[in-house]
Image (cartoon, rainbow, N blue to C red; front, side, top):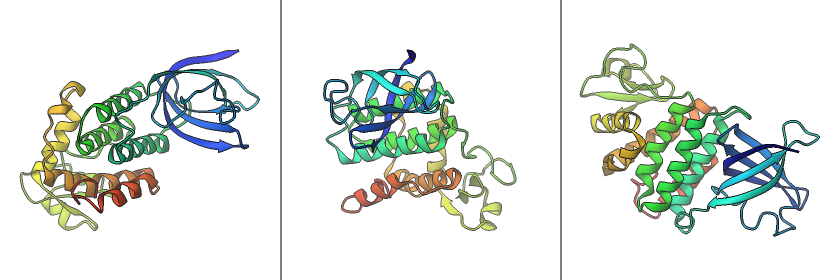
Length: 258
């Protein structure tokens, strides 16, 4: 008996028992769900090329003997983002957003805003040339939707309005710091006013206007240095895909991801 039919995004797949897959999905209706796709690696008729990372699917799930592991009965491909996959930097950005989502989300805990944000981020990565602005703007909004919004309007410690100069940023303190608190906090990194303003705009602007958000090279460098560390600190674990981002950036421009 089908217990749920819903759009979903593929966050991760794990091989189990030679031919089966455990598929981590982020669904519109129920949030994160881990589902078993029986014989997915053996039969190409049931899920023909559909259970790839990031794919946007319509899935049908039914209950199994394990209450927390429903069976993936059917899926219909809605979008496979064909222009995202050939580019390693876009794959790395999408992988990082998927890992943050999977790490921070409880199972069967719906959050439609997270589903919409991920879908929009994957669509933009598929359409647009530069993945870095999409990654950092989406990460800020994702952290906000997941309950980990950094303090960016007032000092994270003293709660006073932030001045124009001399700012700091600390993952442990919870975000931006005024000069006085920043000098007394270790570790804390310098935060340019232009970076702060860009971060604020990324959270304030409606999704339709995010494409117009200007990430200069210096802002990209600070975002790459500050935001992944903030995410790792508050999620309480090292994010494997961030190592991928850093390794990928080494032969190229250091301002991209690290």
